[in-house]
Image 1: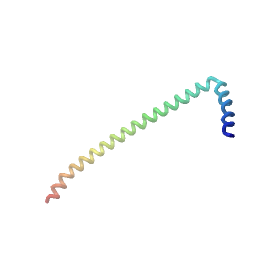
Image 2: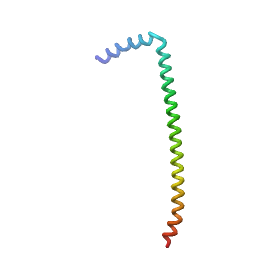
Image 3: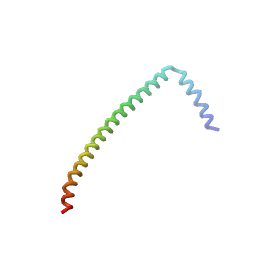
Image 4: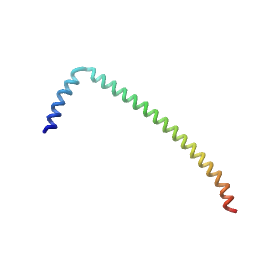
Amino acid sequence: MSTPRQTLDRRPSDASALNAGGDSSGELAAVVDDLLNQLSSKFTSISSELLAKMDDMSRRLDNLEATMQGGDGSKSSGSSK
């Protein structure tokens, strides 16, 4: 029973805080906009880092494949002796 009383006690104070000033909704919108901008910039940064790492991995795999194919020719001629 103590939980509903706490909830009831909180509701009037929250409602009076919201009704006390119209600036609180403006402040909330500004905070949310700032948060969204930060998330967007972090997402852009992480996306570009991920793409750069994938490009690097692709180059390394291409080099490895070329090395293996170049090595296969010399190994197969050595193994047939």
